[in-house]
Structures are given as C-alpha cells and as structure tokens.
Amino acid sequence: MLCDNCKERPASVHITKINNNQKTEKHLCEQCAQNSGEINFSPDANFSVQDLLKGMFSHGFSGSPQCQVESACPSCGMTYDDFSRYGKIGCGDCFSAYGDRLEPLLRRIHGTCSHTGKVPKRSGGKMVTRQKLKQLRRELEGYVIREEYEQAARVRDEIRASEKELSE
Image (cartoon, rainbow, N blue to C red; front, side):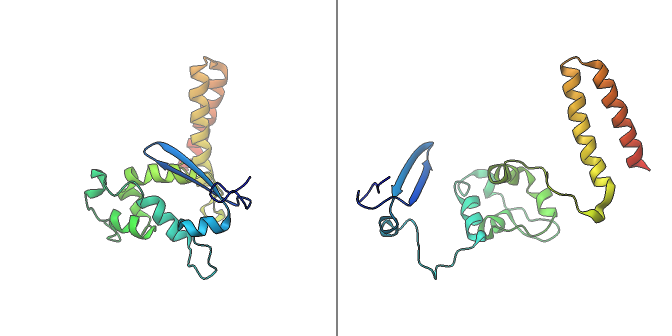
C-alpha cells in the first residue's frame, strides 16, 4: 500500500482517528507522518505508558459535567482531575471513590472491569473459592433460564458447599 500523501513510498504508519463518531484513516509513509506533526519518530522522544494513559483518560472527558465535581479520595487525597492528569491512581481506595467514572475507562482499555488473571498464592484458597462461587452463580442462573433444573440443583449444591468452605 502506498502513502496516501506522497503516493511514492510504502505506507508504514496507519493512523485512525474517531471524531464525533466519524472514523478517518490515513496510511502514511514515515516521512509524511513525521512532517504532518501527528507522530514523532525521533529516538530521543520521551514516550511513556503514563503519557499514553494520560491521553486516553483525558480525551473527551474534560468537558463532561461529571468531571467538574472535585472530590478527593478519602485515603490519599487524590482527585479525579489528578488521576486524569497523571494517568495513575493514588491507592486502592481510589477505585472505590471513582469507581463510577473509572469503570467505562477500564472497560475501554482492558475490555472488562473485573480481574480475570492469576491469583496470588499467598491469598490462598479463599480468593479462588470466591471466583469459583461467582462462576457457579452465573452457571446456576443460566440453567434456571434454560429450565435445566437437574443441572441447576447440582450447581446449587456446589454453591452451598463452597459457601460452607468459605465461611470456615
């Protein structure tokens, strides 16, 4: 594919922009991309994941009335504005303080808001059991909706056993 701008060199940079639900794509060679000013290819350019996240979090949210309210995290004192400015969360309680505003951002970045990765060994079986309970409850709900009551009863018994194990 040739560069959309010069039509001479092969396109190695593909830029996709979405503004007001309008998607525009550009396929540029490295020189045309650098000349456009949208991308900096210099080796001394300081790029960090923090800058990337900062750009993702701040884009399109600064004008919303929800972000105008300045409330601070009760534990670390970090505001939502600080979070959007630095791209970092101050502490674990920030998730509780800003959960309603962080959830859409986390869904956009990670595809989900719940942890689905590995479980630390030192947290032991309780965390694994809680995750197993969540999964079993989803299964139970599915069986009841599909009216598969024998399977639902089996899963219900597993849930009771897991809850008993968790309470011990």
